[in-house]
Image 1 (cartoon, rainbow, N blue to C red):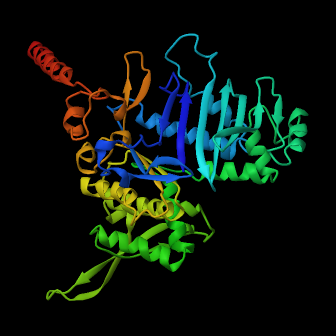
Image 2 (cartoon, rainbow, N blue to C red):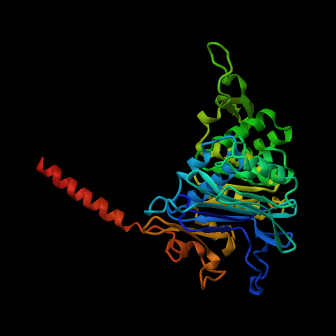
Image 3 (tube, rainbow, N blue to C red):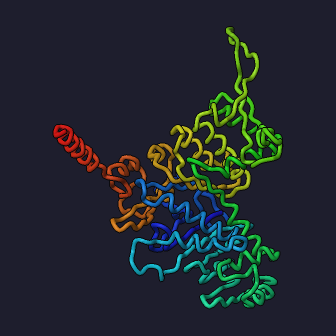
Length: 437
């Protein structure tokens, strides 16, 4: 369960921003109508879904990229020596003398009835600080901390970590480096607690709603190696979305080079979809097969790849984050996906969905609570900030969030009147130029 994610000095987020999945306290006048969108674990009330809204270039995608940057560091900082510097290159760059400010990432989450708070700071491609705390009985206990001088302190609560501290302090170890995370190194060395934290963070499923190669490969893997039940539910979901798909499989021969039959890039394997063919009397004759990428719409392809992510997340009770959520999807389909997560029937393990979108219809149709709606805005200096609707004063529960948002009541919306003037002036100038020729 994701509780909170914080980031600073990353892309357009100059100042500290906290993205919270905590639910607001119950209120007497709510009547319990919105409580279906909330679940409680170990005394923590969390949201099942949360949407990110804002104008183009406001920073919605940057928040998703911030999640990705932290997960990448946790997953690959030891194996990829240049990773920390590449992430540092994505710092906020629109203010002079800002390079001396560290980049900050922190995540709070619940795993196996334990609440962890883990974070780190980067500066000029080096891990400047790092920390891990475990919360129990309303009290936090430090497991380890790392300072700018690369001094690491691990407590007895971080079982067996003293040996790893000695390795890290040696300064010449291939795993414990200045640009790699101590958590990642300790996990690779087999520490059970570090593995638990690392795996929980990297289990967050990130998806780009326009182009997501990882989800495509995950879908191919399910079709090739998954259980019969896993393969069949993908086909059933395609049918339920009225795509006309009758069968799905991977053409393993498409990964071979036609000239020498040597195995080439496995990512080139094609997903084949089959549709029913009928005679003139409406009787099914057989199936017609074709390359999914060639004869299915972009929306149909996205639905298949999204279905893989949905099933994986709903079964495991983990977190799915989708950027460009509404791209290529009918509004009824985006609504259905949100409702899948908000329903106890289809989300019995309390999986969470975070989505960045322009689909304002969800503000009206999805019965979202005010704490499930987050706005991302950017000022004239290029600095992004986030604010949840419940933080706005005087917003009633029965208010038309969609109407008020589009009218600019909550900010985070573009005023596009200048476009008319720009086009009109250009046409006028262009006409004048044409007349002089």
